Image 1 (cartoon, rainbow, N blue to C red):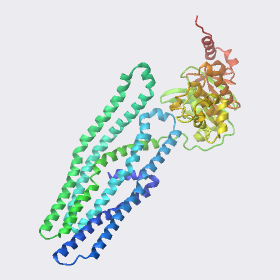
Image 2 (image 1 turned 180 degrees about the horizontal axis):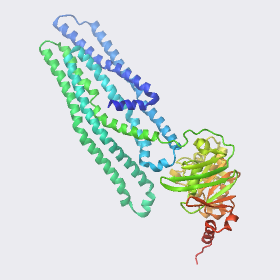
Image 3 (image 1 turned 90 degrees about the vertical axis):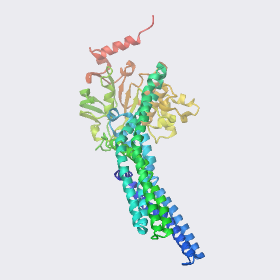
Image 4 (image 1 turned 30 degrees about the horizontal axis):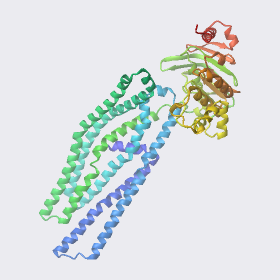
Length: 582
């Protein structure tokens, strides 16, 4: 248990000093907690002596005791307050820093990290798990460490007045610790099971909510909820199992503490009966017996929480040890923006995607990439942006190996417009500002005008301050696409990657988006993945990809006169675009 507390203190990082200072305040607070009992006992002793005629209990002594009582009670509240303000906020501050740290890690790991790790585990780690630590970390430290500090201070006072009572209280503490140790072992065994059940709830809930449109469309509510119901039932069963296994040792922990309290009362009563102890000291011992163990009784509830926190820290440490894709990279200012692939190979897990491909994209040129679905087109774009690292070969931008450049240095030179646009649940203005957070309002509006979205934005109830909902749910596909282009225009990067940017756009919006793309790509190095003939025929260079190989290379006129995939592709597109209903 104390090993886990030590680990939790280590997790607080730079705030560790405040935690230790809090322990000092807790120790002083424990002394001030004990002193009122001792003062009351001293006062009772004076009363008994006055009653027996041994000495007179005068008004001055009453006033002194009263003032001292106010002083020690005030001291108790003061040091309790100091401990709270020193320790309690540490969990919130350390958690906030870890969330930012994890966010930075997620930005710098390969996208393969998200493919190889369960999204439910990742989501719960940065949401429910960290919130759990935020809420309970300092509470657990206070309950365990400060609880034992208080008990040990009171035991020292008991040993001074009655060694036998002190030994009884120590025995109760030792037996209690034994049962707590056994309970901790059980909790350790069950904590990982509980964590998996919690992750399963998060994963199934996210999947259920994301698939709501499909669920409603196919009327499969009954099938769709099976997974989420199973996850919830399993979570319930796991919690009940944990409680049933944990309960006996919790009861034994509570029993030995109560037995120790009864033992202290019995010893003090016997010693008083045999005239070996004064009545006022007996009353003090009895008051200590009622108060002292109340500080560690809640430890039985804390054990399971600590074990869950321990497993959560394991998960968070695993994430923090993830391989950073640009580890060792440098912030390099690129002076040129030509792109070169040299014998590049890449695979997802064991599936080979690219096979020793080589090509060159001159600065300021437009290169179209075409090929069958699954041939590796999007993978090429992802590798240029270093969302993944190549297995072998070299990719250079401006003669610089992208492995030698930090992701931030590289990506500030690249703007990407995807087929599937993601907008944040924020204002339209902030979604556009994502391309350049320091841009002025006029720059945002100018970017929107160039992207042909200013007109529809102006008609919205709150204009650029309109909240567009999660994923841009309140906008059409064409409107979302144009906002994403405005975002890229605002970033004004020298390299533009367009991944099927017009593939899902309706004819009404296509000419607007094409005009917006023209504004975006003017004078840039452009890589475009597209199937529309109008998009690719004017490219300076066309790369035809098939099964991870560059099988053809040239411009439209060169390739249309060659037998091969490109010629067949154009023939099929022309036939498809010329169809009609007879």
